[in-house]
Amino acid sequence: MSNFGCEPLGKRIVLLNKIPGEDKTDEVLVDGFVFGILRFELAKLDYTFEPSLAGAQILLEQTEKKRVCLGKTKKHLNGKNIGPELINSFSSDIKKGDYVLVSAGRLKGYGVSYIEALDFGSKKELGLPEKILRIRKIESGKSTLASKTPDLQACIEANRKQLQTLGKNAINTIRGIANQKEHRKLPVYVSFSGGKDSLVALDLTKAALKQRKFKAFFLNTGLEFPETLDFARKFCRKSEVSYEEKDAGGAFWANVEKFGPPAKDFRWCCKVCKLASAGNFEEEGKEKDRDIKRGREEEKERNKEKGKEGKNSNIRHKNENPNGISYLTIDGKRKHESFSRAGIAASEKNPFVPSQLNIFPLRDWRALEVWLYIHWRKLPYNPLYDQGFERVGCWLCPAALAAEYERVKVLHPAMYAKWNTFLLKWAKKQGLSDKFIEYGFWRWKELPPKMLKLAKELGINVRPEVSEEEFELEVTGGISPCKAGGFSVEAGLKGIRVAEATEFLNIVGKCIFSEELGMLLVKTDKGTAKFFSNGNLLVSSETKEKALGLFREIAKQLLRFSRCTSCGICVKTCPVGAISLEAQGVHIMDNCIRCGKCTESCVVTKYFDKLLPNLDEKLQI
Image 1 (tube, rainbow, N blue to C red):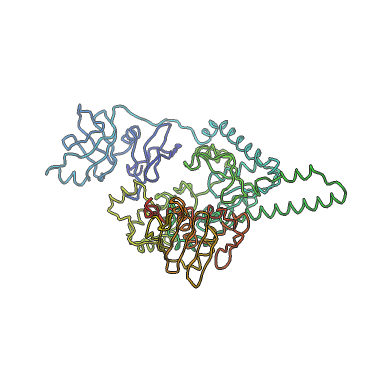
Image 2 (image 1 turned 120 degrees about the horizontal axis):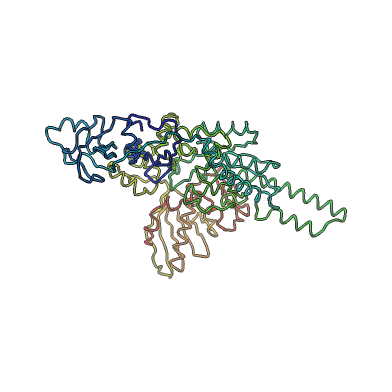
């Protein structure tokens, strides 16, 4: 409210309730009513504050800035445009597009100015536009703030029973799953990101598992805020919680040239920087499983010697760890955070780390309840929350708000400059302007309507003029009938040599490579594919559907090969150990059973349709 030149709220509890908007948008709640809406406007790259009717009436009592005084009128004013004939005074600090405080006798409210104050003063005698401002809301009456307001402790006391119930339910969720017979001996970790939700999850785990050892683990993506790293380490040290940190190091910067900047709908970075490191915990869990199994075998041998081997003992051992679960993870995800998390259950297996079982004790909590719990328990929290950040994950995450990027620019100019330099260089290669980067268009592969509208308003081209892909797949024939029967698809490939592709295409079917002919033949149940040394690719099958399916699978594996990051996730998901990670990259052995699990877990194939967005159109589907 500084643009109105006053601070009317004083030492009151102010809640920011997140509502839909083009970027950071919050209702400002004071004394139980909406005082106004705080927005970060992308076109301005700055905040604006729109008062509510009650907020405007309170501001009119406390400031002389941004004011327009109208003459008395019997006209209905709500939602109307106001001409110069009704205006008695117009503040000199008003800019075009500003929200202004409006009074007309006993009527008080607010509106939006169509002109600059300078224009009003200089053109008053020469003739003004027909429209000076538009009234949003105006009514008679007076709004006031409460003379006595509750402090934070009073709010906590008013919600104590609810917080106790939430805490008890969360503790029971952790205990109920962690203490199941098959889970009792498994390692337990708390996924600790340094954010508010994981902070509460860690505190609840301490209460739930008092007699059981657990670790807080932090997946350091290499893109963490220094404040977050410092907080996570210090909190665990002071709380005497065992802390383990896995560092992805320079994984992001090693792959960003290959993939380009991540986007809201193209978050390749999460797998490369998070899941690859998380797999290390899977290996530790499996090692513990192996230790347990060795202990069982030794026990069985001892029992045999003593003649005590029995069926019941063997059955018990088989059921101690079903479904391949090697360790438990307590996670602070909440279903109210996003649509994608709305359906989370009390526990779920991680599809990318099959031996991990996630437990979600906070799944039914709201953000306000999380914050009340933190203050109730007097837990220290990440200082970034008091610096204008809603989230404290990777500092360059495309899911971050533009408002938060502006804060990064202020708090960590060197970090901001490094990323901005890369983005500008990348944009130049695509034939895109600096404005494309400045206004955050890089954060989407497919721009949503709000960003397309903004681009049109600002006159910014958002269509790359140069392809960013080294790997190119150009469909030359589409799907067509073969002379010998069946259907075929023809395409041209760049960026991959035939001999190099053999290993990855072995995932699709049996491969036969002829160096003399310069051709790779792939035989599958769906049909055959021929990849020639000149870059031609021919896929054929008995039906149109099979030919299209096989072509897409071939294209998927070739793209996967060209963009492989050597993250090692496929190595961990292979059920038969047919994949190894070597200095030259991923190596696929002959014992591959073509189950498809490695393909499902790969970050490249996950975003196949983003990396080759027009493939179906080229195939004439």
